[in-house]
Amino acid sequence: MNGKKIWKIIGCGFLLLETLPMFSQISVRLPSEFSGQEIDMKFHGKHYKAPVNEAGISLLRLPETLHYGYAFLSGPLGNLTVCIDSKAPQTIVWEGRNSYRFLGNNQAINEYLNDGFLYRHSLNYLDNDTVFIEQWSRLYETFSRHLEEASLPEFFSSKERVRLYYVACNLLLVYPIRHSLACRLENYVPSLLYYETLRKAMVENPEGNIFWEYRQAFRDWISQETDYFHPRPTNIEKLEVLMDYVQQHVSDSLLASYLVDNYLTWHVRHFGIDGVACHLPYYDRKVKDLQTRQEFYALYKQYGQIAKGCSAPEFCLPDTSGNSVCLNSFRGKYVYIDVWATWCVPCCKEFSYLRQLEEQLKGADIVFVGISIDSNRKSWKEKIAKEHLTGIQLYSGKEGSFFHDYKIGLVPRFILIDPQGNILNANMTRPSAPSTLQVLRSLTTPK
Image (cartoon, rainbow, N blue to C red):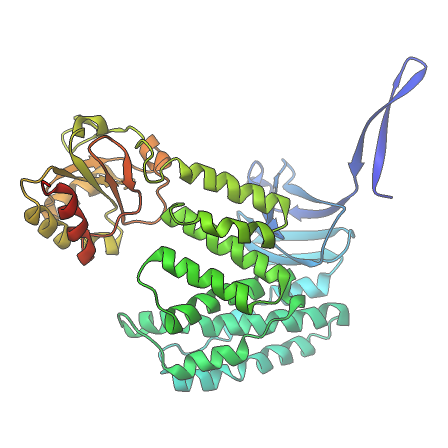
């Protein structure tokens, strides 16, 4: 049966109201003091939320159409992972932080998934890549042995072995950044051995599509692979290389669909839509899931509002004295906007380059505007004084129209607006980039 039909009696007849899907239920029990809070569960890319009632119980319900996988629960006492493979009910008794019990379906499996073994078995990221790869090569065997010792049903173990392989791959993929942080290195690049090891390890397995570890591993590996073997200077060129790689080398159709959507979505969210249109036909061929397509094209439409040539959204923001300064007051001049925050290290590294840029373009028809997204205005003012920041300094925070209209995500972010108030580049190059001065000089020098 695909659902339950609910009837309502009207006079002597019956009216069919709707067909409701059957549900799989997960019950979460917490101490009653957490009533009114919320449990969030992510399962196959969708979020399911339910409040905690006065008795400390939260009921999460999944539609009848279920696919095997792991659900990730977050709540006031932490995070948990549960295996979902049927409509049989499951219960989680959450007694305190890192203190819980599983009841009902998949009890032993859920205990295994939350025993912390994978996180306790750490690798030494201080080692050079040759030594690290040697210890990493034994990791999957260690994970598999722990799984066998748990003596879990084969329907679970056969799939879990696939997941564990890509868990291990992800721990290798994070080596460059973790080694850089552990050894305080800048611009670290591993040896060729590291990339050759990854090439041998990263083998497609369509059974892995039910696990985020599989998709994430390929997403990050292809990014590293193309950056190392096919480096490109601009973000749009990097996107082109990624899309070409997927088209030429990825045979798993579900994985390819995920990668195409992920790479394009990430690029649009952080760098806008300029240059992206040529990839849309390929996107349409590879990505078939209706919800995924709707979300991407909604995002594409939003960022189209700040594409090159569009009218720049108006804003009025306070300066350090509390006076309101509006974008339209700069009409007739180019406006180079620096979006920054006091806690952003890359933002602060650009300050000295920005001062040089202002000096080199002194007297030109250009205005330099700094806009802070800090939550603390006092910290913002102190940073301006400490760094001797010049130009026009304004405050936005993360709640105002500027933050949302200009789709601010990563900082630093630089925006260039022309004298007519139109967007020239919503993701302009940084002051430290040599091309920035060249572009601005070409625009502001009288012809």
